[in-house]
Image (cartoon, rainbow, N blue to C red):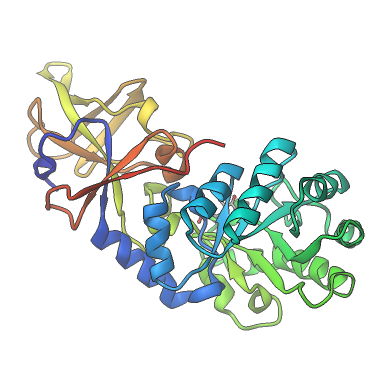
Length: 357
Ligand SMILES: Cc1ncc(COP(=O)(O)O)c(C=O)c1O
């Protein structure tokens, strides 16, 4: 796609197609309507995008940082915000409790140990979800520890709303094995849920898991996968080249735009250089992609690429770069340039207003 439609936008910059975004949001909302999806805002960090997810029927959201929770609450987006992450910072816990009190938007935090329970209670928070380790070596208690953590939470006057378990190590697993592998993880989560439900009472209903790479396996209405009642997918809204390599029904809705600053054609080869580099791209999933080009490497402020076929772009031309990992890419930028569809001029600039921690 020729990116000259972007006019005099200063690069590197993010550009978003509303048409592609809304198509992705609609596709997911059809598969997982209303509260069966708890969209993860860490993948876009933007209340402008979250509002479109609300328009598609979702009211409950997943957040990765206290600031995402507070930003969503203060912006009045959604009615049920989950910090799907352990927080031991008393000031941030207190700030989330204040945001809940002042906005009336429910805040729930993940807990996986007695100390995280006590800190949540001390801060004045009221709702928790027990985070269970289902196989990714990150946060989460052992399934058999969930009951005693729930007992402690109830003893501290907290409402235990259920359990969550993130099977992040399976997001890009081979498709034929994925359902059975996810099912193994979810057996652990269900075991934890069944062990806490009588301690926690009627308000204990949530079994939350999943992401963009696994959202589709939970439609299997068998006894285990079918019991997961909300999916925490986030990347589906904007997508990246890592998820783009999976057989998923979502399209790329956001690119980093660069400008060609140098070209070389000679005996040692032909290449072009744009002003998009490591400081404007999340690189943990590898090099970004450029249509019809081979990306050679990225350095701080540059990406060097050659064309598979056809001439090099000219100095000054715009190039669209597809990030390999959307979440860390978004976190490096302060604004998103919005176009109605690819090829149209920019009509709006949305702040990435949920940045930082
Ligand atoms: C706790 C949690 N839930 C869900 C997700 C899923 O996100 P995505 O849809 O981007 O795969 C993540 C991603 O890292 C996560 O950390």
